[in-house]
Length: 386
Image 1 (spheres, rainbow, N blue to C red):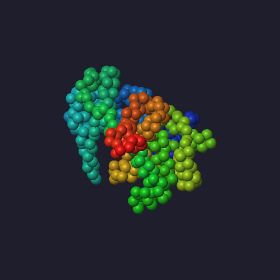
Image 2 (image 1 turned 180 degrees about the vertical axis):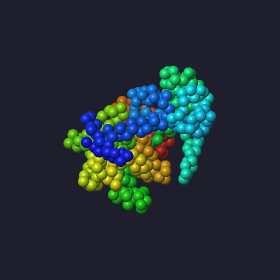
Image 3 (image 1 turned 90 degrees about the horizontal axis):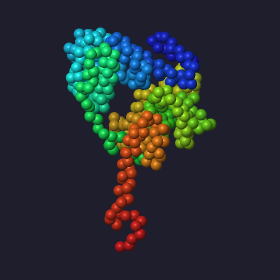
């Protein structure tokens, strides 16, 4: 039974499932945050909230609720479409008077570039078409549901302006090239490219950092999949480990020798002893210097640092863990592996997602052209004499 304090109360997890306690706790935290957001929104949306609870994944539900709360805050603060002073007080009648042009103005004008002012700073936000498309999608689902339940009189979603997204192309999929991966691994092995301050931390975390990067580039794990890994996830005798994926799926992954070595090095040489670890995090695989389970943000910053070294760029230009997922996918496909096998490994819902990586073959084109010279002086091994 895991225990954690939440608002000065202990959260006790009585876990009768096969999931580890940390996975159950993470799902609980997402659901609690969703409930908090629902309380900030109008009560006439309760049916929609029930639909989200049963119809979409927890993370998707949370993203929808954030988007809808943001729209309601916009209605209150930036328009005359409601007399409410807070989102929860917006009425169904007021929502029913919203026109498609009002939503288009919100998406195309307000969301593209807006500012948020606090007591200490002014934050400027800029959204691209992908972010705008997600916000539009959240509102489309909401308005369609409210129309279906006869809470609003018209389905206005047909009047929403389309948002053009670029077709997947060669340059859109960002990932590390093979030589950049090797440079990144050299950096984490030897400390190359680190500043003096970074190197002082690296001395304490180099085995951990190596294991994290190797898991990302070998298995293409999602950030939260890696962050939630436990010691008990790994069975070194069987040469395998378990991960928990979207929709509560449990997957067993084989361990290769490289990953097993770096994991054993980290566990044996660097990971804190069990009696030193914060209560509730004893089974967490990757720990911070504070001996707590690493946060997603800390792992993201770590990846950004080492990928920036691999690409010989500044730290702000480093890549996210998702780009290492793309690196693993394209490398596996370019090695000649079946696209369906790669789909299964990466847990893509649809093979068309995996095909985006199969289409991204700049290295293959380079090899073809480099070996297709027309001038004798550049041909190698052609056996011809002058």
